[in-house]
Image (cartoon, rainbow, N blue to C red; front, side, top):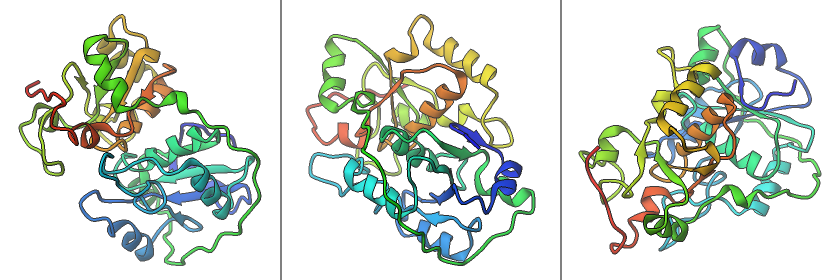
Amino acid sequence: MDNRTLIDAWSLKNELGDPNLVILDCRSQLLDPEAGEKLYREGHIPGAIHADMEKDLSSPITDDSGRHPLPDPFDFAVQLRQWGIDDGTQVVVYDDMNGAMAVRAWFLLRWLGHERVAVLDGGLPAWQAISGELSDNVELPTPVKGGPVVLHNDWLVDTAKVKANLDQPSFTLIDARTAERFAGEQEPIDPVAGHVPGALNRPLTDNLNAEGRFKTAKQLKDEWQQLLGEVEAEDTVMMCGSGVTACHHLLALEIAGLKGARLYPGSWSEWIRDPERPVATGA
């Protein structure tokens, strides 16, 4: 198996027990940091390891950062080895939110140069829909040794570049939050509502069909090209509230064959740390 974008529940079920497979349970709730581990202990796909959004997939918040700073890449590389992930491992990541949380792990592994990572399409609900069993056994993986980290820092854009882009545009910023949050009509998480001036809005749910699975490659390509117009994917930067769900767009573009988009990891929660940075409201 060599999956790099999506895997369906039946295919995963057929691969259970493969020694070269590692499954990461990435369930998380942004308003309840303890929820992910609780859900994992209640029941998870057999063999899955819990990947905690706050402890494993992020680094501690600082005075200048957003809510989910990227983990230190070398610490995260060590964590991958502790989970039994080496260069030849196929990794499958899942959540229960249509990929909104699992895409963080998908992006992080690719950021570190690990290509063989796929998101379970439809997540845990899709697994349960095929009567996939659940386990409450807390997995204790066998650590492995790994090679050097290949770090793709050119995939990232920091706040200074986003600010400079306001006056001298060199990329198009696309915000994955809901239309209501983007417009500043509601803000359930961050202290300031609105969006970065000039950004476009495409809620991550636009990448999904009615069943909560990713649309076909053709559908995604057509929709994204309509949104971008003459702008190439490589001239786009994805953001959201804290750099997590923005990765949903990166996966959607990968499925569509539109490569080269980058991530603004700090996203809205970092942008508003400085009250001097401008804020826009409305659609």
